[in-house]
Image 1 (spheres, helix red, strand yellow):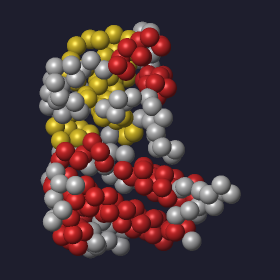
Image 2 (tube, rainbow, N blue to C red):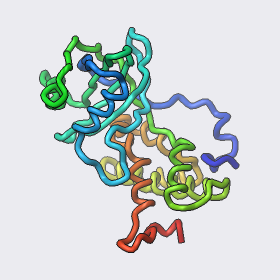
Image 3 (cartoon, helix red, strand yellow):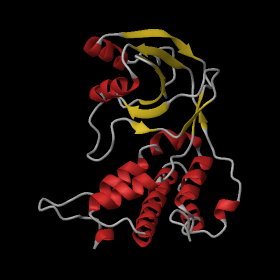
Image 4 (tube, rainbow, N blue to C red):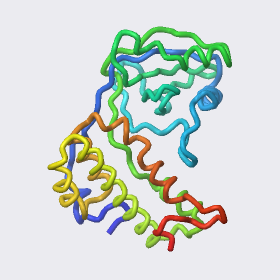
Length: 245
């Protein structure tokens, strides 16, 4: 049995991942290289819960005419707006897009743009990206996330520890999925839980998004939120989650 799967043979079944295709995006160019651009953006973003990155990985795909981005990120801005941001390195400059989840004629007038220009300067608006350029999919549980969680908790990165951690995260993802479903279809939530008790984490997230792709922006940081909960400590430094007992 692999670290990320409880269901024998699940990896052999081809599954079309559900996606959410985003509306148009703002096209920007910063007068700094990619690393500095990412650092500047992070300095402007609101402080999330401890242990959660300001700029999260986004499980997104590029469908536009341009070459695929060098990096994808996602974040919630000061107004709680979810934004997907692809980045292209261009030597000493960086082109990036801002794809907010909002609707309406003013959705691309993001306060973050003015904050960036006012703080760091050297930022130009160079147009827009067409609707349908970005599709967002369910987040994936990576080995890096598992390994770093064990290391921060002070446990060795061994197969049995990885499996226990992956199983615990699957249980917590399933409970959160039930909350999402209960808010819109209370009658279906118990069936979803029962059908997915032995499913791997990826299947749970895929089936949740199949039920309603609109949840995808709100689960991009879910694995990091779970990681933060698992690594919470008491004032004397003891890990609080029962998984470590």
